[in-house]
Image 1 (cartoon, one colour):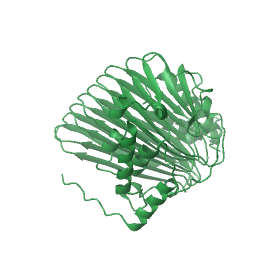
Image 2 (cartoon, one colour):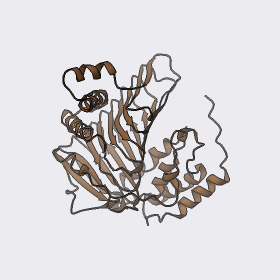
Image 3 (cartoon, one colour):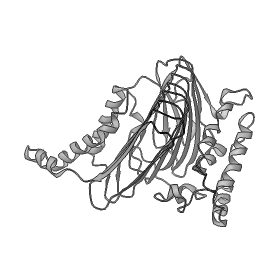
Image 4 (cartoon, helix red, strand yellow):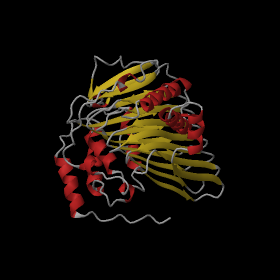
Length: 433
């Protein structure tokens, strides 16, 4: 395989990158992260921030994510912070990127070490081996400059190390109270061999939000991630998950999204140990001035590994959905099982779904497939429900919920699945207004 040549940066891209960098006041750091952040800044300058001519951004205009000043977003409180209140969890709250100790639980659950990135300065810290390292690996073969920007300038985040099976889920809650907030957060998570963790995330976070999560899943360890991106109509967010899986590791990530002006969720997974499993799924509903982009890149580099990508989008009133999913099977990664499914339900003729599924395979004993469909509500099913006295609005909601259900099945915890299913049903009842 011949690596594609890197295009020379245009002066416009250099100027745009410099303007964004100059608009940021980076945190004052010392200790182990200083050199890693400096390296990230160097890599960012070499890549340049994304523009509409970049291949991986051709469906999604990145302007509002890269301009020097963040667009304002009115504070919108729809009660999404309470979505996981019924779950046994350790709650950690950030308000516009600032840790809120009054609203947070003690950072000392059994089997888990939790520290704040801004306060971990020891030169022998375990996170030194991971911070920015998985992000750097995830830059090849596709540049992800907004992730490098985050590694350089993130003001805070969590460093989570799990040594056994945790009694409670770790729940990160993001609040947005400043209409001009521009937040970058960086989480590093390490699961030792045989460990298990459920991580929950929810809340609007900021007017503009850039988040990176680096996750190393040890041999036989299990990582469950469930995220709810709420009904903040003016949210602009880009998130990145960089995951590395060792032998027999399990990684599962599910994201539920409703509304927002622009949301791009990237997930980059390296399967480096035999018999590893990685599932990435999402369900989203958008209305009007809405763009939702799921971009996934899974690399199989070991024997007998399984990956699944399942994404469902419901769009109306001109909303736009994007799916870019790639499975790369390296030479020697025999017995790979790779699967992609991306589907959109368009509730009117003005909405749009753009899909780019990719398979790149260099092994001969694999089972890889992808499927993508776009369509409207099944008129026969709608007629069947209407004939039995169900109103058109209720019938549409029922069929929409049934369409999204396959993605929710990827959530292993039945109680969490029920929580999100209930919230989806409530959102549909409100007609995603």
